[in-house]
Amino acid sequence: MNRLEKKYPLKGLVDTHLHTAPDTKPRLLSDVEAACAARKEKMAGIVIKSHAEPTSGRAIIASQEADFKVFGGVCLNQSVGGLNVEAVKTAARMGGKIVWFPTTSRDKITIKSQDHRSNTQIQEQLEDILNVILENDMVLATGHLKVEDIFYLLDLARGMGLSKVMVNHPLTRVVGATLEEQKEMSRRAYLEHCYVACLPTHDGLNPEVIAQSIKEVGARRCVTATDLGQTHNLKPVHGFKSYITLMLNFKISWKEIWQMCHTNPYQLFF
Image (tube, rainbow, N blue to C red; front, side, top):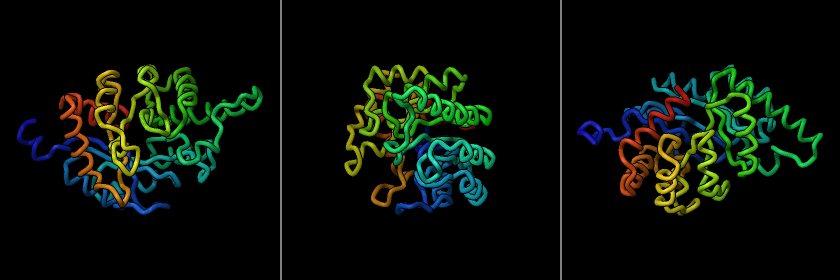
């Protein structure tokens, strides 16, 4: 790093995964507070996420109040009607940039059915949603889907020409993709590795495992973010710095950090 990078180690970077208040769970920072903290570090932008409600409108307010780029979207859990194309259309009309597939409602929402007739109906729903994502230049994120459902969604997305795709949490318990599965996913999507997975109150994942995955898959197909905002964890900007330090210690180069935290998020969101 040069002197400026040492003073502002997050300068130009984007955190693609933040949980902020208001929310159904206690959060460390509000949308505006998180944006102001990121602006102070000279970051380029943040993405705010809620499992319970859309963040598209909240992102507009936070961007205006903090004079900083904040992106929002919608997470397709039961609280917004599950695989609800109208929720996606509304998020798009309000400037939303990302659609997360089910997270907390994953086990209650069917992505692929064994019944042919039922599966045809579900596929039509999915195609309607993917069309809105494609038409509005949004990002498709896989949320907490299981590996087989992720591949099913990736196949649909590829068939429709959708290239802005991100697989969330490939190494965590909620997904648990093998290295070979991650390599296959990376041919059609970016893999988002979050710092929160390394913390003992969450997955307790060895950060070296993430570093090894990045080396195997390649930084050009990975995104690193924090997934922070919980009251029992570090503030997001502090967590981001800690995460970057860990990756550097495990021989991930600054060039690769820049690729994953700046270049790749720019291609997805800007």
